[in-house]
Image 1 (cartoon, rainbow over the protein chains, first blue to last red):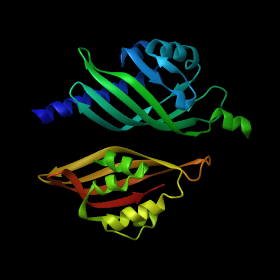
Image 2 (image 1 turned 60 degrees about the horizontal axis):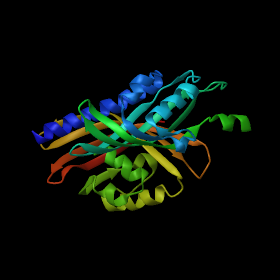
Image 3 (image 1 turned 90 degrees about the vertical axis):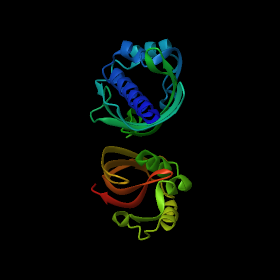
Image 4 (image 1 turned 180 degrees about the horizontal axis):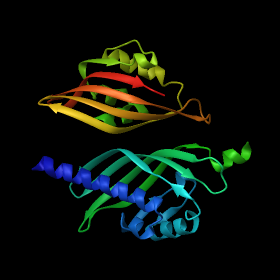
Amino acid sequence: VIETARIADELEIAALLYRYARAVDTKDWELYRSVFTEDAVIDYSSAGAVVGSRDEVVDWFAANFGFIPWSMHYITNIEAEVDGDTAIVRAMFYNPMQLPGMTEMSSCGGYYHHELVRTSDGWRSRDLREDNVWFVNAPTEAQAT
Amino acid sequence: LLNRYARAVDTRDWKLYRSVFTEDAHIDYSAVGVTAVSRDEVADALGQFVIGQAMSMHYVMNVEPRIDGDSAKVTAMWLNAVQMPESSPVSQFGGRRHHELVRTAGGWRSRRLRLEVFW
């Protein structure tokens, strides 16, 4: 029974991370909100982007991410440490994307570090820190060459 | 277990790396020129192998386990993004990993690994 509960948690957590990716890639900011608690803290500073509350981040995305023709966030290597009603989660992302004004596709990759909490609506993230590790064909790179 | 393997290599945590395998594991990295096959020798060789890499990220996917009681054969696909020295371009490689696993008191462990590199 304990094993079944653990597997159920892992599947729900993976589904939450895939929903996050789908929200960003389809630019569905209501769906994006549903991944987080109301008081969540979200930190995209490693990619030179926004740090703030859920609503601040959604406003930033709506203003700055809408110009991106497409992105695909592949999520792999999900490792969740569940402790009762909280969980620490580490996952990897692989993100090819078409940036505006670029002739070739760009891509980047890194880690997501989430702190999750179990709510009446299922698992939600109350803290996300993105650790962007690599970037291929970044806009600044292309301008330099 | 396969994600722990990737995390061990990418964080250069050779103690964690050892914890993926049984003590007598046979590890075949001949595809990347590593001749050692015992767990501890391979862990040391890998430590040398990644010295020139500023970072690596081993993405693991398409995990296919075939479980038979207390042993299992697992094939998984991997994609590795590697940066050699700082700020040089990112290179990507891909292939498959073939594991033979055994169920131990400490959970599943790999007693045999063969690495295949395609690109």
